[in-house]
Length: 241
Length: 262
Image 1 (cartoon, each protein chain N blue to C red):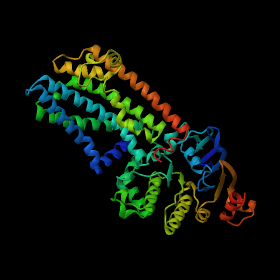
Image 2: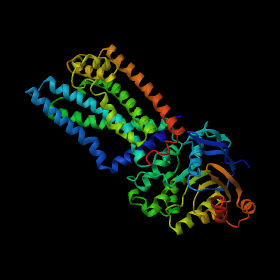
Image 3: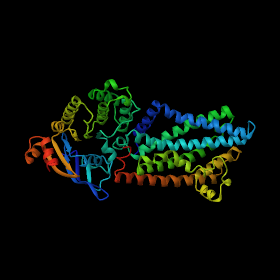
Image 4: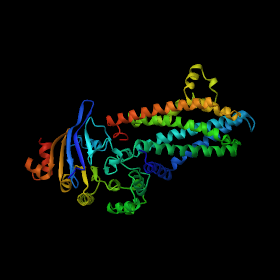
């Protein structure tokens, strides 16, 4: 099976400070990779490098066997992105925001798709509402709906469940798991909600100060570090050192 | 590669914003109206009679200057809208190319310039009996020269914001004004001090406004004057594209693109 995304020796240095050091991994269809690490570990930087929003110091990002640098616009049509740290224009309505992005991703039959996604993310009654009136959780759900507009094969999510109530955290996590399996979608996500992350992801990348401390499936990592769950693993690696 | 759908997406984003924002309509239509009325009546009172060159000279200059300002802001403020909305990363994480994005902003800037100048033109006819559009094709020859220069300033403004962050947003309003004294909008270049005249020699707008005044007196634009405008315009747009691309690349290298608006 060909990987959907391959990262080769990806590094980023700002004025002699390395924020990411030689990160390499491959993710395949239906893989859900959880990136874990304390604040400042380089998780968001890694996602931004995967979207070419930051120029790498060295290394390469390859989607579907093609380098991102060479075919950026074409490849990003099949990549979705949502972040808790990036917003949408508040003056526009929910539907208008989705329409704008449907055009940016050149989505066909977008009206039907918008209706379907609003239903999936429980926002159908907010369709004509200004984004200014949405709660933090609703805004995040809208962001997720936007990220699914182009039927991505790779989905990058930066703390997608931050701001959601426990019910919606569970709902979104289950949806991500279901959709990855059903469509062969690769999902890469960062999160500090370890319990939910453990339920969703089948692979983990542990980052500390830009370095990969461990990478593998949940089983491999739990066995290697002699822990029984992700929270234990986190504390063993990042807190006790 | 330019995509019409993506360009349309950018246009749609700005038209939706305009649809919901009274303050943006005020910015687009209210200030030009006030400017026109104020300067129209000031020049009318100085002139002392209803018809005459002074009023036309002032209003012509004012309308053209507004075209430049609206077009420049269409680009610079258009970019700032996405900075303010913290939406910039969503745009650049999408298949949108720089060419798509800037093309969308440029088309929107033409719309802004058209709206403001059309309103001013109509008011000038109704209130001051000055038909600016009577100049026909010659008016467009000058206007297009102004638009290219406005886009150059807009691109440099965006480049400065990319490099220095949101602190530099003041340039969206201030940078074009830097060229105002040398552009001879309301006076001939000959009244400027020698040093300023030398600077005006390298500013395309000085030829546009001198040409416009000459046109109002019935003199058609010469090929030489149009060449001066467009050669300077090409030089400005060429260097502004280089500066923009360099600063955009630098913003990505230094990670500034992901920090703007935070």
